[in-house]
Image 1 (cartoon, one colour):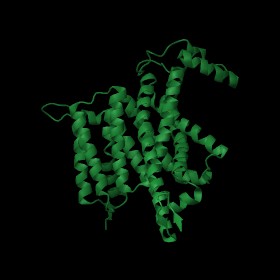
Image 2: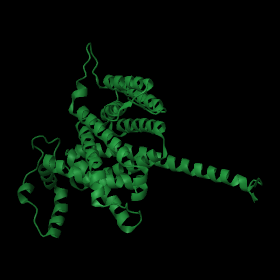
Image 3: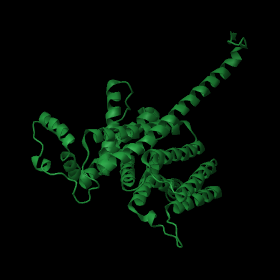
Length: 375
């Protein structure tokens, strides 16, 4: 018999109950810490990402460097043994993580383009359409039949997004929904939704256990694959222009000269001879330099940590709490866009986003019942 500090005696029969209480408390603490890390890192990633794009407007280059930062975070952990490396080979990675990594790369690149071309606030309002995209994929690709309540929850989501993106006037002007920021935000949402479907289909519990793919390693390996996949579009779309802009900056020349010296080569003097502020399509000049390099690296670290925290959170929650947590995350990001980036939240934007996020919450609650398979 064991006696507690309060003097209460515990019999052997009480021991499992006490152990369960301790496990529940530890789970709640872990969930709270991961939620705080997820929301905080995601909010400040959006802030630093936008500021970096304002200085160096090459979104595909920024997106790739952010994923490179994630690789540089996890690779030393695996190499040093501080984190157990997943038990995978090249064939498994190519077959299982290759398609998911490609979709994740497209999703990340598209969202960075959206954040750079428009406001962070409106990009996340558009991304609130994720439930509608998930339902469409479930019906068309998985043979799912959503419940009536799930279908009804999509009405405020779509209505809120349309209202927030529309312009006041006599007619319904929704040109904001066809703009580049809106199109790329929606492309990102669709890509991430398909990536989730593939991940659920391919990453079974047995595979995760056999391969050492816990939530952290799962996202880390996904980051490595995405980094490889996004390199080609970065190189084709912005490689030359981004390099020229970097070389044209006085602070960046110092870094490139050191790199060139280590490689035994010389940086291009032709590019150094002219600034790129008047280059076609260039938004505000090539002010990259040491400070902006650090800013992109910090945003990349925050992006990696945010997603690792989110993978841990979603591993601890069921479908309904997951949807609620995602809706709450959007609120944090929208608040950060207004508070730290000075973005204007008009009454129309506030009203529309509130309606849409309420719909997201109702969608999450409607998922308490499993979806039916269509016959």
